[in-house]
Length: 102
Image (cartoon, rainbow, N blue to C red; front, side):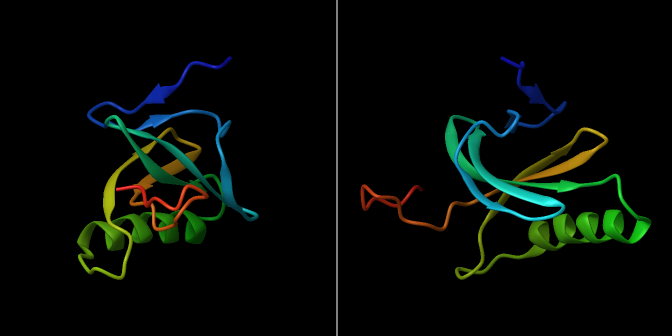
């Protein structure tokens, strides 16, 4: 099993997506993951594409950091490993147990 990665100064622990895959596209994967003892949504976006793709991912991070609205997922943290940007976001789904993650 691969060791998790934690960015310096970040509480976000990155595992190689062995958890529940919530969404996957060409350049983005969304899974559940650990953050400071809680479960969060981890959005992983490729950084090694075109300069436009990289800039778009970094703008999205900055946008999430500034937004504070009850209808938008809360931003917790981010880290990057050179190839990917990882955003830790509030879970916004109910699971089979019927209990929302908080």
